[in-house]
Image (tube, rainbow, N blue to C red):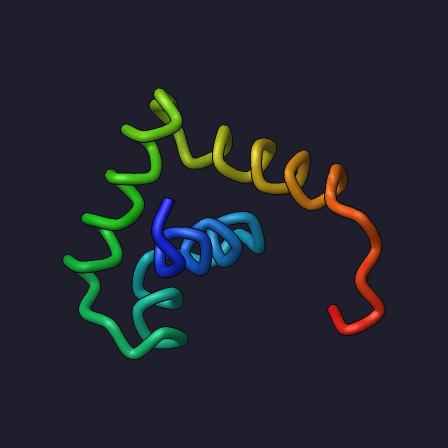
Length: 68
């Protein structure tokens, strides 16, 4: 995934809506929708909830970083 897709996935995992993500990242709402769709496609998912679970699993498997 691209860096931007990772950013969007993180915000989806924080249960932000597309308009909230757009505001946070200074993007248009349609662009956020495209990025969410791209994430879903790349991960072979159909629902945002799957992104939330996947992202949290990814974070849990990462070594601890004191700078986070």
